[in-house]
Length: 100
Image (tube, rainbow, N blue to C red; front, side, top):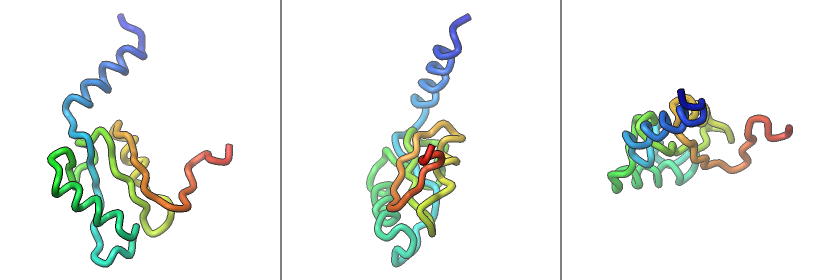
């Protein structure tokens, strides 16, 4: 039997082979009150690129994670829970365990 790290590598490699590079799951608010400008950029990026899927974070190798009303968003945990790499867009963000 192969070592655990090799099995994990094979598992993640299989996931990457079946996914698009980028994904975003969230809303686009007119006027940009939440994450000014970045959500509109993500919306345009996903419409203009076949390498981006909007509406289903489980399909992306990388997941766009813009801030919500505050400097933190649950999207990071969601991305990690489906083995997607979070790409954080946020000013004044406080990462978990940052102080430790």
